[in-house]
Length: 288
Image (cartoon, rainbow, N blue to C red; front, side, top):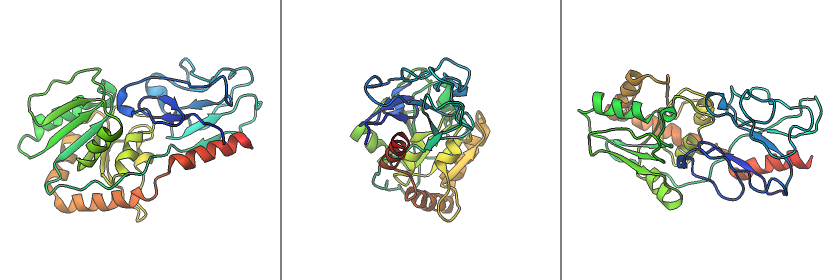
């Protein structure tokens, strides 16, 4: 099997054996592109930010493995509108052979919920695109009467002012420290104004955490549905502080709702794809 590059959402990093944390901020790295199969990985939905795409996909400057562009471009249908990773193989001519590999997630233990459900977690580089300013405003302006704490994990590129001690910006975390942040949470919140796939959503679901997120990019597919058809959380419109505050108030004041979302998140957890499945899918395409 090839040592295959994979896409880590949030950091937009191509990786092999280890995952670059999505909260570390944007970076693009192409390891070993001169020694392995030449593959361009197009991250869908990147039209809202700096594009990362195979030549001919999207309108911004391409980021691709060397040698891509020597033949006719191969466009992945639905890139920009869906949450998949499109692998474009150069030199295949004008035909459409395009394979789709859904990003995987590592298995993780279930988080143990607190009684009040007030431990909120957001994992993303702190930038206007990720919407942490909206979450801070909703919490401090509209939910000051309730009991909650919110931890923001991620590189602070655009600081967000806050008054209370129940809001913490920790900077980036990885490995055991990031695992501990997920384990100490009740609800994962992602108030992004734009997203690609939202791999932090599946990382939260892998721990049985319900997710409150904005309905942008591929987040809805990352969140998905439990086997019984219920959604393991809630999707709200982007850039809507009132909707965000209302959803958080429901979560914090409605114990039966918390139980339903947790049960749905645990159901969704069992159907998440693994990185092994993603790698096998890409390897099968390259070996075909």
